Amino acid sequence: MWLVWPPEGGNTTEEELENAMFSLFHQQPGTLQELEGQMEQWSKEWSWVQVPESFKPICKKVHDKVAQQVIM
Image (tube, rainbow, N blue to C red):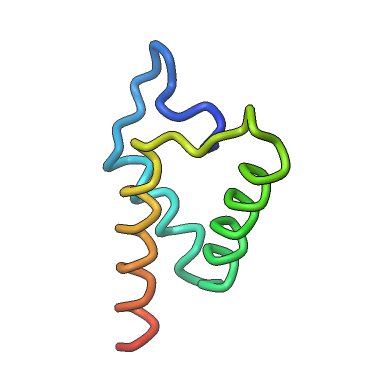
């Protein structure tokens, strides 16, 4: 999903993406860290694959929300 963010002509908002990611990663928080690691690795191995700057804050928000839920 991060390879095509932001979607061209799409109607998905950052909030909707954030909520969808949170729902996916809430039950298995380790998979969020795995995604972040894969994004970093892909960016290093293939210079043409860069994480869009607009996607990084979304990941951070989801990461923070997941961490709060795990602590509670």
